[in-house]
Amino acid sequence: MLFFPINNMYSDNRVTDFSTTTYAVKLNSKLVQITNDPYLKKDFSENSLQIFSKWIKADGKDFMTELLERKIIDSVKRISYVNKLTPPKTTIQTWPVWFLSFHNIKTRVGDNIEIWQYRFDLIDNHFILKDSSLITKQTVIHE
Image (cartoon, rainbow, N blue to C red; front, side):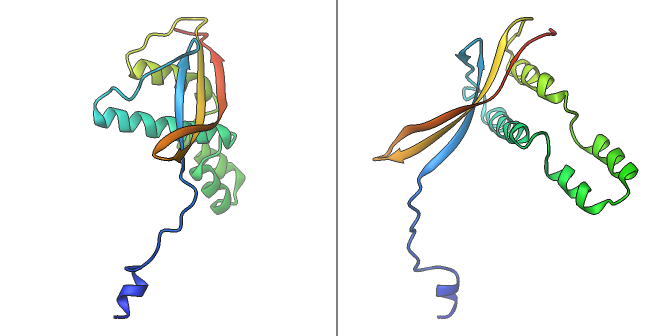
């Protein structure tokens, strides 16, 4: 009988925060639909958009950068590894254009791309928008 309490067999779910976060891309102020793609492409798109947004919010630092900074004391080696194993800062400008082209959406010079974060609360089985924030906004400078 000891295993039942250890494995939470009779536990209560006391979660009171039923909120979720999602990310979206807008091209020239119009929402880009990525959820109509086949499952694997949709899953890849949602995950990569989320990770890219978190990378921007962390000022271009990711797990690998932090790990290398902690583990490698020699600054020359550390910088070399960081440059080889992490994305360059120019990715902030190139990734959104690549993301849209991955979804067969053409961009032109002068187009505006925005990445947004939305937070929703689940209230009475309906999602209610709690807040939104702009992650990045850029104007396409290359085709």
